[in-house]
Image (cartoon, rainbow over all chains, first blue to last red; front, side):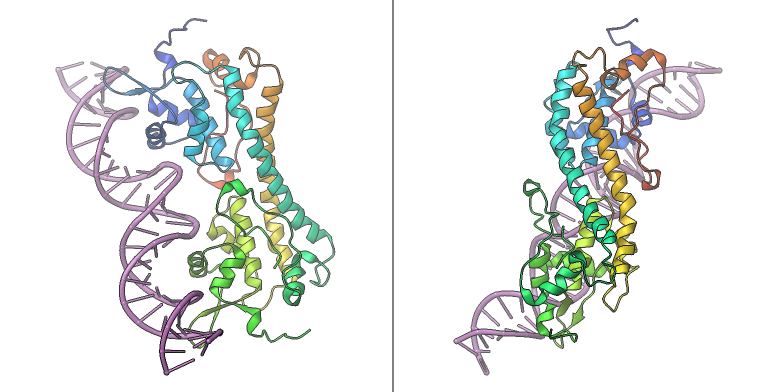
Length: 167
Length: 167
DNA sequence: CTGCTACTTGAAGTCGACTTCAAGTCAAGC
DNA sequence: GCTTGACTTGAAGTCGACTTCAAGTAGCAG
């Protein structure tokens, strides 16, 4: 119930932040260099972080897990105000921007899973009936045909293939 | 109905394999160096790939998307016979080994999504009611408490945290 | 004030996954 | 048989995401 002027214990040293975030201090300095997080300095030039920094870090880690680069994470985080605590609505805005990404990822994994389980379940172990295992062989003479989903988001850039077990 | 001795057109040059897999030829050579794929050689020492190689490549790409390294992919692929076409059952075995991984990944993404949408939907925009946005501030005095899921597979190694928006 | 640990910096190193390069060889169409 | 484009090699370079290092300074307990 005390501070809204952050008292000394509201600020974390880099070691404390490392402990609480699970990242190495070196990684935190690296993140700071990239502009993902920010620190104030003591008179002796040591970094002090607000607790909100943990949220930013959590966000970055989440972003990475959805397949984003740190640069992309920065773009999203840059929508947050620099020098005041972001409001819930502001966090929401950023969070929203992951939504479609997450859905996409889930969808892709579901497709992959469907292919795997579908094939495992379809009694095609003899390699004679299942399109998944067999398409390549059948398509051999037939030319290009039978393509089985699992294509990737085109915005993801130059990764035109590799998502197909057929052929 | 022709070949079971693979005729010339059953074998792909590295350029053709690159085109059909969407990977660069250099990447394919790299994969070969890692033992992920294999090639026979012409009398002139050029690589020739069987069409089954496309399946191996697709598998590797899928593995990468589920977050595995090429080394891990190799471990899985090594369960396949080297010098004959793998049976459906054999592919199934390998595929099965991804199953749990995929499920895990999906689950993690679902958790992340739930956290995001849950919070967005819960009317907590004022930053006063929602545990997701608020836990940190509330936990401030309370010390370490209220941890909100999103932990990672421990087998994934040294990535102890970062998966939490709280705190 | 001493001593110790945690901090500071920039530069260099590492790791995975490739790409680029240079110099030379192969395969296929005309 | 010659040309042209696809192929060969090993070595080195790149990129993202960090880590490690060396030399020095800050902050705090006793």
